[in-house]
Amino acid sequence: MKEYDVVIIGAGPGGYETALKVAASGKKTLLIDRAKENIGGICLNVGCIPTKNYLESAVFLSRVPYFQECGALLQNNGFDIQKLREKTLALVKEIRSGVVWMLDQAKVELLYGNATFINADTIEVSGEKVSFNKCVIATGSYARELSNLSFDSKHILSSTDIFKLQKLPKSIAIVGGGPIACEFATFFNALGVEVTMIVRGTQLLSKEDEDISKALLRAFKKRNINVLLSTTVLKSEVGNKSIKLLLGSQENIESEIVLNASGRIPNTNKLNLENADITLDEKGFIKVSASFETSQENIYAIGDCINTPALAHIAYAEARITAHNILNNTKTTNSHITPMAVFSNPPIASCGLNQTKAKEKGIDTNVKKVYFKVNAKAKIHGDDAGFIKIITNAKNGVILGASIIGVEATEIIHEIVVAVEEQLTMKEVEEIIHIHPSVSEIIRY
Image 1 (cartoon, rainbow, N blue to C red):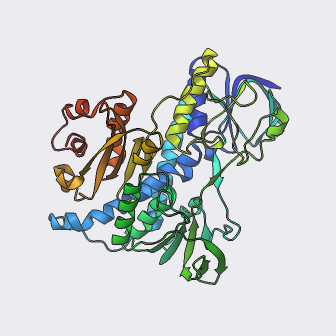
Image 2: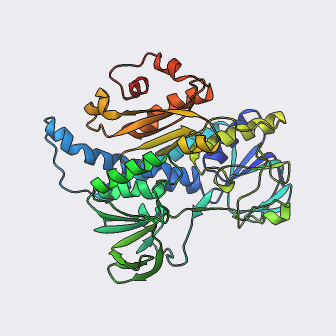
Image 3: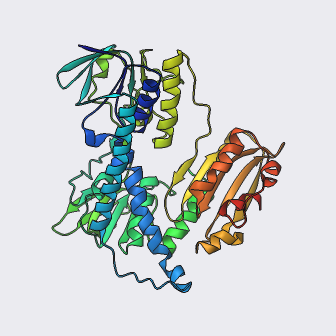
């Protein structure tokens, strides 16, 4: 039986980041995943990276009319999704090679196969037993399947299946109103596909500021994306060339394909966690302390398999904290402000408290709202839609949070992250010299 100081199960952002950190400090480290092609996890292979590469093409196409007005001799003669698929696969492979190289340089050992726990200090992988002093579970999540929308990879697709499409459909129904649903609605709409969104809740992006959600809804409707709020799917009927959905409103809609983007489930059910007395919550997430320890102090869990926001940048942060705790025998927690982002068109980003959350905490607030129409660089980009909304404490002017919808929102949010984390006032941020013209100078308006 091989013995290791640290064993990490799952080679996604949380897993490989942990492995790099602990191995760099001299710990004998083993990183496990099902196959070499899975290194990088959902984010690299079928999530963040390919989605954003697809969206980059979609955003470019949406701006073609503006640049035509500026004199560019561009023509939109259709779109070859097969070429985009090939380019994206090459990009993913290139990035994965970089991750493997970093792991090799750090002397992280790799083992491929399905890991299961034998007890609280031993696992089995493909018939081989491995013991450890510390273990980190970072097994991610998988797409939630609905009973009336079973994935068949042909008519009813998961977000993973989208990247297998060889040709564009004429129409798509997207079930869900979260970030994944909104991003794919943006992509398909920009390529001329008829898009219908079926959203169970009363707004798109239910966790975002209500003004932001309303602005996105207006933008989607302006682009002829059909958004059905407070609507559920009762039944699906698959035909030869289309699929019919019976909705809670008793109306039917028909589309060539359906994307079920109704959420994700923690990937914990095949680890035999009961053998290590590791506790799950009612949703299947691994229960952890604030310092990411499971019910076994030598076993940690991070990323999508615990009940924190399922975002790669959160997994990276949890990995760094967990590695620090393993190396220093500490119980450090995540005290940092977490930015959120949706790469829709227009893009959205937020951090800290919004108006609703501040009110729930009983905080008296002031709201500063500035529209991108006053920003010269946004106009130069050919996209001056949207606004930034900053929430401050009415008593002392300290910035509590912000929500942004508009060009480069996912970049300029970081200035607000620093402001919230360092408890800066609005006056202090306004006095910072911003480059002109820049999109970020909207913060000082």
